[in-house]
Length: 154
Image 1 (cartoon, rainbow, N blue to C red):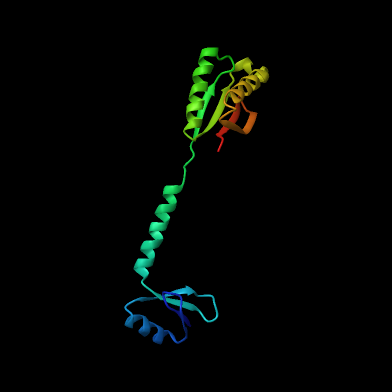
Image 2: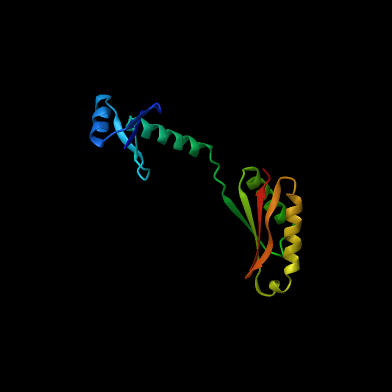
């Protein structure tokens, strides 16, 4: 097996017992890096320290991640102007917080006969928030609901 020191210097090819003895003298661990290589590659290192550094890197990477939530706003095709403004204000707040917004227009009964009303409503909403949002998924009728997804501009 090929043995490498912690700093990257190569010690050459030696038997397992000899490599273990060398690692023990240095008060370090013998860790197999590439078991499929011919001959297998082992590294003499402080394995506890290595695991600690790996966990710190993972925690740091998690801190830098931004979790994006999808908020949902439900409206009806026969919504009044004031109610629309309230829903619009909520959509703007969600987008400013960095969340995606799923806008659902719910139909009941004969309202389903006029999907153009919902299209107009969703187009109006997307034009209102056009400065800070982009339409990720355009309005589409799914069963008794029409759904559109908005995402904040980066």
